[in-house]
Length: 448
Ligand code: ADP
Ligand code: ADP
Ligand code: MG
Image (cartoon, rainbow, N blue to C red; front, side, top):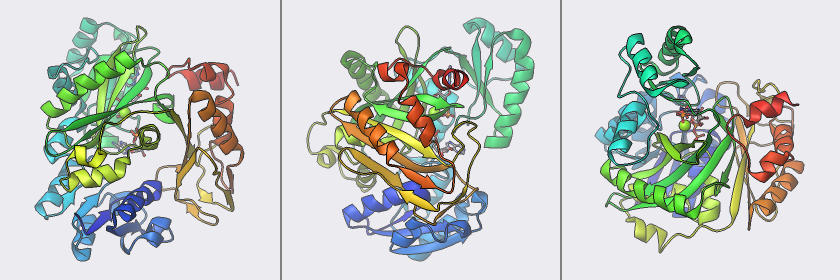
């Protein structure tokens, strides 16, 4: 087993990984930027190393700095969390070359999953249903026009290296394709240092449903059911729940059996998420693989009883999955997560600053994952996530009642948060009935 792990991240996920290490009796090294000197992950780690200035390209994204910190502190492994270097195949490779275990899939698998058109091809070969789209990267505007013609409008142009909901354009017809093609290429080049695009059928009113995968280094794969992540703003998730109100046991079992084969076929190891869009006919179509732990992993932990982050560490240490899980996994009850962001609840404009007052809710069925504290500062340089509020109940109604109670008792003073928006969503009749698609929030906000 590892003696010491470096956590190459910040905020709530750095604390989450730190907790898993403590549970396993593994020592921890935190890394931090100058803006995060007073963060809780620094305070609670056994050792901490400053890796650079606030700007993430000079600290949390700077591979030489992170690897030097790992070498100086003599760690056995690095957990990358989500975002930052978590899906950077080059970083995973450097770790491997430095004799440090990267807690995640193998570099070549990360690379394939990160190029979304390659991931699509790999899944299609393994028999997973995939949205109709281009074969590989679009070679130019002519190729885009011909492909769109073949699969039929509307289509979506997407950055092959995309993430975080950026680099996507909906194209309604051939007239607007050329200008959107150039816009998308520019945005992709600027955001992901790779302008390449692919194209797939646009689903007008989809639900986003994703499956949690755990795969060990001995060929065992377990699927821990699905999460419903349809409540989004700007293609970014806001509320997630498990199980999905619209996935039947038959559909769940069928996708899980496809995925067990597909993940084995691509040589996938460690934790990962396979994302699907549900179309109007109720079919699930693959969109991408996130080769890392996800923000919303706690809802799956709540209904499965499996500690996903601890499992990641044990898998990386070579422990077989049957031993980690200790028997068949059964999914019980319901769980929901509200992402509490430092944002204005109406405009979504970021609202960084000092937290002058804070009350975190608790009680039965409530979990809060956060690195926030009174007088702590939410810096403007990073993601706006302040806390994840997760509730659990025997069914969806009990889970929602507990979420309402917890949101009422969640007080954050000094900055704007998305708490009031969550309260309004949780009072909406369609939301309560489980009837929604990814356009829910836009319509909801328009109707005030
Ligand atoms: P999840 O399903 O875990 O929420 P997201 O795609 O929202 O997945 O990404 C999780 C985090 O990683 C978010 O903070 C997001 O901003 C960040 N992220 C994901 N992909 C990228 C990327 N390519 N570049 C920068 N940030 C990213
Ligand atoms: P990212 O890597 O940024 O997370 P995804 O491919 O996972 O990108 O897509 C993010 C979101 O964008 C989806 O959850 C969905 O809301 C929307 N989206 C992506 N592809 C399509 C599509 N083909 N049709 C309709 N909506 C889509
Ligand atoms: Mg995605």
